[in-house]
Image (cartoon, rainbow, N blue to C red; front, side):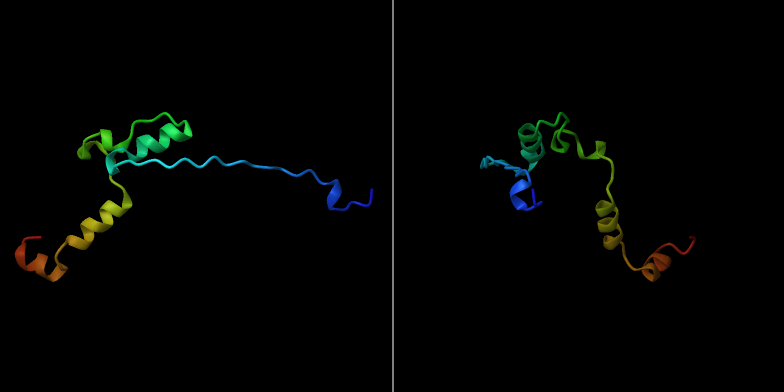
Length: 77
């Protein structure tokens, strides 16, 4: 009755580890299958169907030539 650690309930979590082998295009489907999520994997849709993500925009911007070079190539802008 003193409120010691013996009075507290202990929660035990058992984790079942499962090793799987997959390729990049099937990874999302495998994870969703293991976690019980229902969704279409991104690898199942064409690239042009996917919504662009920030990292895609960032990589596109990094591939652009410097602004002064663009202005020289397109002076009408």
